[in-house]
Image (cartoon, rainbow, N blue to C red):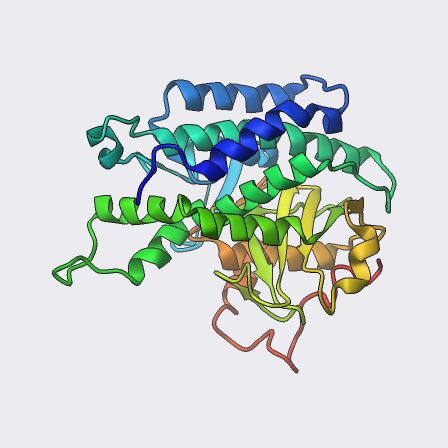
Length: 341
């Protein structure tokens, strides 16, 4: 049943807003922070185009001219754009049912905007600490912020156009026809307001071992219109819809030079528990970064996004999707993102 005030959004944002400042230290309103705050204001005041990947996040991948470089995997074309124009659709979270019952039809969009504002500030500070700190350095993550970002990642996994498309494939209208766009939207929002599912995802991510990687190579991390990636424990496959699968871990690029890993506290990842909430002591290589970037090529619904116009490796990997090139016994991706931990 649809509800105008989903508990999982309200509970965490209110708690985190009061307590997250302690983990951020003294904040500076730098250029990136200013842009992120402005995007939040625009979303709250005039939310016509709804982003399923937040603008604050996309802005971390712009080039020196504030542009994103995008490879359209379906059409094999590259173009430059701005964060407000990509990974978004008109009225994506708009629901007439809420309007008819006397509630704001943009409730979900506004709640996402509120959550994103807190997450932008918290993760922005993490990025600065990872950049400025030494390898192996611990990162201070209070429990409130851990729950906040876990909720954000769980919802990011569920909220995309890719998730809506997958969900719609398994559903039909009462007369057996393909679902209308309104019906798809209603079905998707019911999923996003499923407290049990969202809380299970949040607990799973929050209980994981969090390790932050710093990339100082000439190759930037890329992202996509479906950025939360899942990898098997043997590192041979990326998987969709596998956040809760045994042994799989999450890979989430925070910026072109910082990546976040969430390893489940089970074999073979138990050995990394002592590095929870730390900067990885491992030194990234070009090959390692390119391996992690294959996640975004695989996960993308359509668009792979970068701070520069270079998608040679992305195109190369895309041609192997659906083949056994990286299967067990064949060519492998980077063996273990924590092997040097």
